[in-house]
Length: 139
Image (cartoon, rainbow, N blue to C red; front, side, top):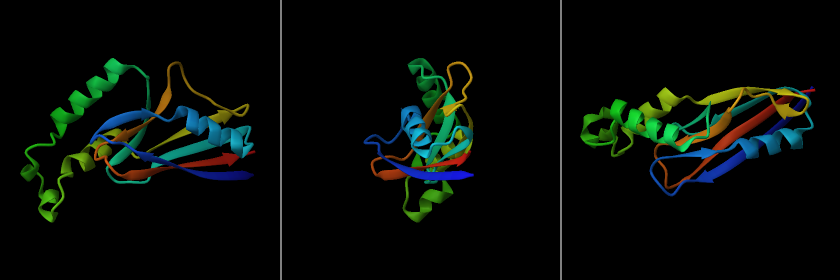
């Protein structure tokens, strides 16, 4: 069995954003030489997520509104976590909702997606470098 590990580094200048990382994951799969297997993609930070959905701007705006209604950023004093001097209590909750990781099948050396599926990095407390782990395993 083959194994390949790659880190993607992102620096999102805004507090929140969604970034399509499908091409970078496809590149890691190609580099691995794996034809049949799995790829794990996970955010290596507790205020960011990785998820699969459609690359459609209206949907991303809907996510932003929905997440903000569930866990509004302000007022920051509503979150006990922020008593530590942070202002990102909402980002931890948003990450929990959107998820830490995804696993995608690899078939014939390619990501085996359903129609419209793409992989996204979700940033909820940006303005600093964070990483995403891509781990490919298979034959």
